[in-house]
Structures are given as C-alpha cells and as structure tokens.
Length: 259
Image 1 (cartoon, rainbow, N blue to C red):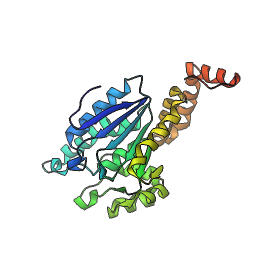
Image 2: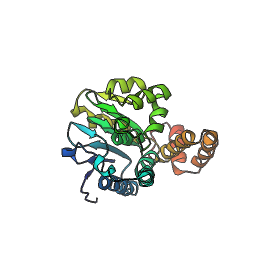
Image 3: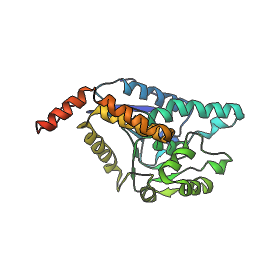
C-alpha cells in the first residue's frame, strides 16, 4: 500500500481503514489532504482483497473540523467555483459512487467539509459526543462540497435549512433521530468495531449485487425519472453474474453462498 503524508491507510482483513491524519489541525481538509483522499480511493478501488472502506479522523477530537480556511482567502468567484467543482468530482462524488461500501466513523467534530465527506459515505456511525454542523454561513459562504444537496436528501428540506441557516452544531443523537446518522456508539473504543461489524455483514453478500444497488440508489437520487429504469437495467445485468448463479445455487442447495 502507498504511503501518504496526510492520511493513514491500513487493511484489516477485507476492510481498508483510511484515517485523516492532521490531528493538530483537527484533521481539516486542505488541498493536499483532498488530493490524497482522491488518490487513496483510487488505490483501494483496485485492490481486490478489499471489500469495504472506513473513513475516520485521527484522535478523539475531530473527524474533520472543516476545510482549511486559509486556502480560501485569495480566491475569486471563478476560482472558488472551480475549487468546488474539482473536489465534488474527485472526492465527494467518488465516495458516493464508490462500488464498495464506505462507512464514515465519526470520532468527533464533523463540520463543514468534514460533514460533507461523511454525508458522501454510504453509512455513518458516530460517537455520542460528536458534534455535526455546516457553519459556512458564519463565513459569508455556503457549503460547497455537496452539503446543501446531501443534507437535504438525508434529513429533509426543513431540517437541512435549519442547520445551514443557523450554522449551529447538533449532537450525534439528534443526527440519529433526524436520519443523518445510522448508528451512535457511546465510546471511541466502540466506534471502529461497530463500523467493521457492519461491513463484515456485507462481506457475506454479493459484491456484484452491492455495487449494483449503490449505483441504482445514486441514479434515483440524482435523476429520479431514471431511477426505476436503472434498477430494471441493473436487475437484468445481475442475472449474468457469477454471484447470481452461486447465490441461487446456494439457496436451492440450502447452504451459505460462497461469494
């Protein structure tokens, strides 16, 4: 596996754990970190022994406490729009469309770009002490890495606008109640084991089926008129896969499938 300056990458069984490693900066996202995150996702996607991914932050204070604001100071409007577009495509959209399950293990503050990374993941697990928020309006800007769209998809228009317009942080348990968080654990020692256990449940299922399900869900979110048609298309394609043949054979033979 490659060595990164601002990230740690390790593999535990079939799980890749990506840790944003800028603890002294509360794991803030600067350009270098985002570029490395894009590169590590490409690396992990090509590793056949990896079936799932966890993204977390170093330490117990922050998952990612936002973007590195110092990098925003000199940008004009067109430069800022291009920055947003690049990291949409190279990081946030890449996570959302990743063909292997990706879980955000939220170990502390997930603010601004940090919450946007977490919302790009397929599942979110958080320590109960974590704080979540999109405080960009306090800087005179708005969320620029997908936050206005993904938060609305997860919690609905009213709650999303409340969070964005006030810029206030919410507790992890509020996020659980609103649908922003899937699971809350009480301690940091429980966080990675919970995320790993969720991924391991997917490893006994078809990787082909999981990748198709991720694609179908994403198409339905991005273009609702095409969601059902994409589901029909991918349902048919699954019937040509080795996983489908093994899954059906195992069911008929009353045994566990070997995917």
